[in-house]
Length: 338
Ligand code: 5GP
Ligand code: MN
Image (tube, rainbow, N blue to C red; front, side):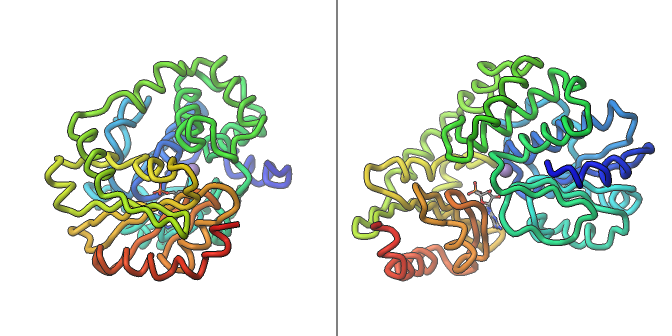
């Protein structure tokens, strides 16, 4: 963390504040972990805190310490709007543009208090008083560790904070295998283990608590796999009907796209998931090597993310969306075959 951020941050936190912490919509382990970890740290420093999520988060994260106190904006809009309006300080974590909070965007734009952004996505918006942005970081959870450390408070990280931060690092690094995992990430992780994060248990909670319906939905997804050899690309589709048939619950499709990427010689993978309620197709993109799915998502699918992991959406039908995807690929043929 850049040293010129430490002073302004300390100044903002000098007196007791009403702090709101916000993850992005459809929060993942890193978004929820970073918010919960930082929330607990602030609570220990006698700030009053609320963690408001734009919408619900997956069952496989609900065991996390403090998860039961998260306010769901979608479900408790009035209460959440009041809390945001009376906040002294708003921390936005794991995203870099207010539209990533969906329906919560309006309430956040109305807020007059200072914002602090902690995030590892490229090209941050300029809405925060303090912007701690670093696209080289493995995860926002790793950044929260550095932030606490730079406040001189690493020794205050207890087992609960360590557990939250470990979880986000684990999920955002693909269990420490993505290129964004650095020696520093591993040092931070080691420190979190020493402070009480129980890695075997956390891995089990995250990855080994499947419902049979989810495994069968995975089976369905793999049946729907399309391979486009000339473009070293593979993609998966799931219709709303597929989801309904397998009693879909939030988070069930997490990681499915990686099966497409695991194919030998595939460097670009996608999953297209129909969402009839929102009238959109949600898209997740993954790549190997230097092919940037961030660029692809930004240029064609109203999205963004990182070089090797990005997401976006389409307002067209599932068929029209995949047809468009297939029409786009020739533009990238050279890059995909480098
Ligand atoms: P996922 O595919 O797991 O939903 O997301 C992969 C990465 O892309 C994450 O870093 C996530 O924040 C980012 N991402 C996913 N969906 C969107 C989107 O609609 N817009 C933007 N800007 N980023 C997204
Ligand atoms: Mn993240």
